[in-house]
Length: 103
Image 1: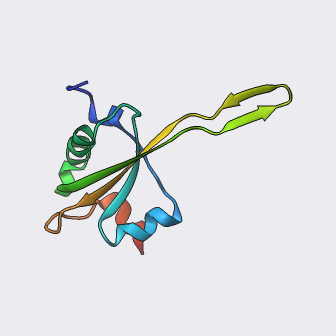
Image 2: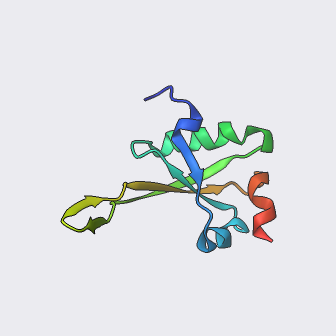
């Protein structure tokens, strides 16, 4: 797992109202691979957004178990999701992708 493509680690940004509130504090939320470590997530964010001059200070992760859903007699589970809360350093530039959404 050491040499994974950064785009395989970061699946997509989480675009919710709660996530928008953190953008002004340089806190961004991403959905990441279930088996990704905090170090891998940090390197992936710095690599993917290298053009923006991003430096990561800390990464916090949350893993949610999929809810059980039923359809008639059949039951199944939604997919598990792992989210990473990435906080940038004070001297880091913000991520350009999120700048227009914070306003």
